[in-house]
Length: 303
Length: 227
Image 1 (cartoon, rainbow over the protein chains, first blue to last red):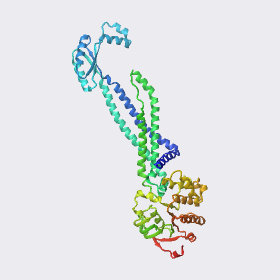
Image 2: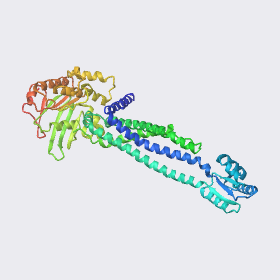
Image 3: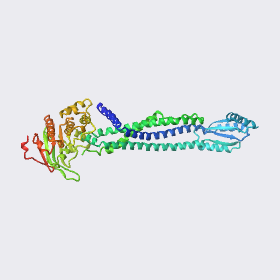
Image 4: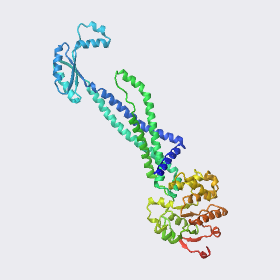
């Protein structure tokens, strides 16, 4: 057992030394692998941030019911009590026309203009927050029904575009899955091909090893370790690329979010995803090496 | 006790003629046997059947009591480890030192790192190349390269050593040295089977001769004269 371990360790390190003997080729291969791994990682991050964003806007499922201008506050209260009794509705908040005007005066900076008006142009408003279980269709039905009431002027539903965003994100998620599969396949092919060339270059050596009685495992092992190293280094390069990209984009993005006055926090690459990416690289490296080795080593026989 | 036994062995190459025809012969344990015959007589094929580089078309080959034709492809490496082989073109790895070349069979056998240097140096010492262990084959003379190949063949302490034209690329004087070296291994109990067409050389070395002609054994007339 110790001997076996010793053999693996020596294979592992000597294959790394082999890679160091041709630095440029190795660096290029590792970078290609790194880029191929970083792309799906980055796409995934974009989609996750989008989901996060959409999630934070889920609260924007609220809809506003504007009453006909000039209607009494009691009409608003009556409608509110009625709505509260309904299923699918979590809460109803009344914004009286006077309060709305005050708030508008404060936030809009149009105070002086408003002074010119002799009456309040704003209606009483109900902010209706639906239950989480309410579907988009159910919300739309409620909205439509409210719209038909005589005391209601306009019903403004904000849900539709959130749903569209979610649909886009669902679609993008699939795109990420496909991209990930394709790029991982690319990594396997790149590593497989690199190792195939390596096997061809060392044909004589492999023949001699086989003549001297080396088992298939013995001949195979160094190549598998080379694949593993490629995958590991590619994974690390992918992480570096993502960190650099993240560092480059975070500033402007946070400013953008700030402008939208959002509490949103950007999702960075978490530890688990980072490790998954490196582990994916290692597995793809090993897998690529395995495909090359199983196809090409057996063909080399001493003659 | 037989080390090698061929029972009516025929070897036919794809698209070629019969390299061996219904050949039978034996090598006893501890024996020194020279395979002679013109090139194309089947000497190499016979050795390749022993090392399982080829498999017989018909007949059976026994090495140390084992019917090698029955060995599966997975068992071939183990079989090859039991045999030391010296090649005409020495088949050394040119990008590694003499030491590393000789160490290969030990690494393949999984000998511990602690024991490897001692055994490699012992083998290099036997062929008189201890001082050149760090040199690569390219910087060694043809004779020295062949001796590195021999050190590599014996470092695993095989019971049987086969050599295919080991002196093919050497001048007469170096050839004699190599043959004497083989003699010394034989004296310590290694069974030797050496293919050579150099009859001149053999006249100066003791050992049984087996002559091949067109894939068949022809008993040399002077068999009795040889020790």
